[in-house]
Amino acid sequence: MKKVMILGVEVSDISQAQAIKKVQEFLNDSKQHYIVTPNPEIVLAASKSAKLRSVFDKADLSLPDGFGLKIAARILGQKLHHRVAGADFMLQIAALGAQERQSVFLLGGQAGVAKKAALKLQKMHPSLKIAGAESGGKVIKENNAWATSDRELIKKINQSQARILFVAFGCPKQEKWLFHNLAKLDSVKLAMTVGGSLDFLAHTARRAPAIMRQIGLEWLWRLIQNPRRIRRIWNATIGFIWKILMARLRIAFIYRPNVVGFITRHPERSEAESRDLVDKQWDPSTPRPGRVGRDDAVEVLLVQRANEKYEHWQLPQGGVDQGESEVEAVLREMGEEIGASQLKILGRHPQKYSYDWSRWHQRRGSYRGQRQTIFYLRFDQSRDSIKIDEHEIRAYEWTLIDKVITKVHPLRRTMIGMAVNYWKTVIGKQKSVQKSENGK
Image 1: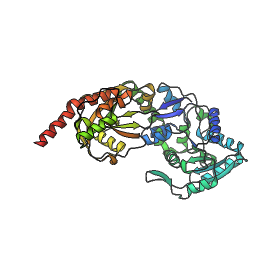
Image 2: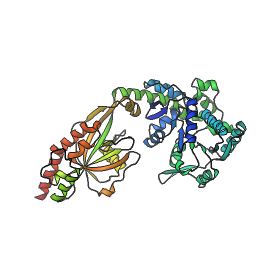
Image 3: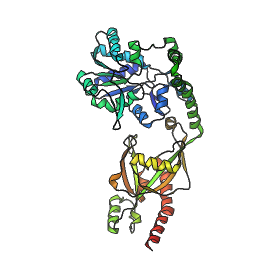
Image 4: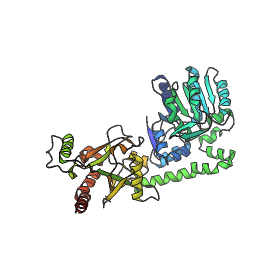
């Protein structure tokens, strides 16, 4: 399936007929699936949140619900051939559910909206089984997960034995709630975020005429219906296109500022323990290292990226936020990615390392590439104190400094070579000098 990348959000370039065929496949396999329907406003929100982008990345289908996405794709040098409106696709799934005797649960909207929408859907498809219709109450975040004020909601959905779930909490709550709770819904095979579609069915909101939707003026209809939404509509139109234009400019010329943590651990080992460590990581096909002292057994922290299919070992790193210094950024990123709160900065590499991303990654990150500042940090906590962010990192490992270059992904080796060489020629020697002075 072809996909396009808009401000870091993957969008499925698929027709409505092809998408329905996919839904049929989803309902007949052994897994759970979910569908999201990004529009310009949603893409703009996701561009500012890595966790929300992760929810979209993991969706089985990400259907382009907005004419503005086709314009954005064109500006970014891509082609988005199809548009699948979420409200229309929900009705197509309901028709399929009626045909294949699949039960449906409607969730979201203001009090009473889901039940009104259910009655309308039942009239449209008399053979469709409506398993339940609930507002769900207020969506709240508790203990780093999303729930609702209706504490019995999960139980109600499970008791209904619904196979298809439509969620209308509004973005980003509906996407985050679904991502955190789908696995708890035993009978649900397919879930879809539907935004204001229940309001259209219940006639609590009027949808734009077809001609306005076809020529991309649905935003004007929403403004006429509710002038108080002018700020949201401005963001979804002018604000969105402006950000797309800036992304195109960045892709052509600008490198994203990035900080890299070269985190070392200086274990207090005897010479025999250090030699044993080398024995475990020594490659017999290479010359055996000579005498091993404590400084030769320095370990460097490597992490494995979570969003890669294959092993991709690298140094922990992250972007510099607007208004943030590089020192603030590296301490924040290391705290977020590995939970390290007690890191001592030993120095930084005098040169920055720049590289260009592939076309796909340029569109994903909206930059030409990255310009990295390498920081050298000392880790003084226990091994058990590392707590990785599973959204970013799959695993971590302490590796002997002489093995780091061969361990990391080939794309990272030039930068890692710079980092290791500077540690050995400058940072490591400074540490040795400090040790000898302290000894005096």
